[in-house]
Image 1 (cartoon, helix red, strand yellow):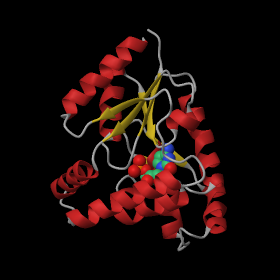
Image 2 (tube, helix red, strand yellow):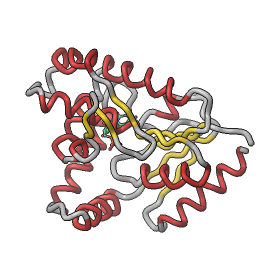
Image 3 (cartoon, protein in one colour):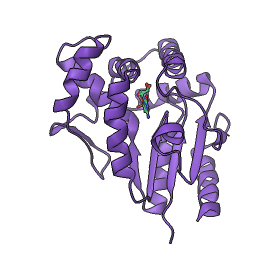
Length: 219
Ligand code: C5P
């Protein structure tokens, strides 16, 4: 059967990765979490004591960064399992700052294209349909209200035993969206040929079924 490339873009905490993982499993495709790669750059700056605002310092780290996305979903940075560490709020905000740097983006985009070569892939991020894979056969722009997104993320954290404040979380998500949408290089925006999917009032199962329908039409 034909193997296509699927791009899922959208604002922070819209549930892109959950959907992408489930669809990838159904289709036996490779899931590529591009946000995790920006998080690795921010995490590296954090552990080296380099300010996220220090563009030259952050760019200087790139040559020594070996990021690996393993098939089980775990993330390795120079051999270290950073899967949980890169999800910290501090690192989320850092990722949104370092992702503004053109050299950081070109470094990661080249690796993302290499991984996506050959199709049978589903990538989620902010610039997949617009920059990384403009030729992707299916592009989805997944959105949900900031309240829905903050509620989902809050619930996830509480279930994982991570303490957090709902209002703070909502404010951080809104701030990250504004940064991602207003940056100069590859801002978050819907590709002209992307299908917008508002999941505010949809269950996970409904979203996956809808995306699977869209995929079927492309095969
Ligand atoms: O998707 P996730 O929330 O893990 O991404 C973290 C941050 O990385 C985003 O807020 C965004 O600034 C950046 N990012 C990006 N381009 C991508 C994926 C993520 O700029 N393709």
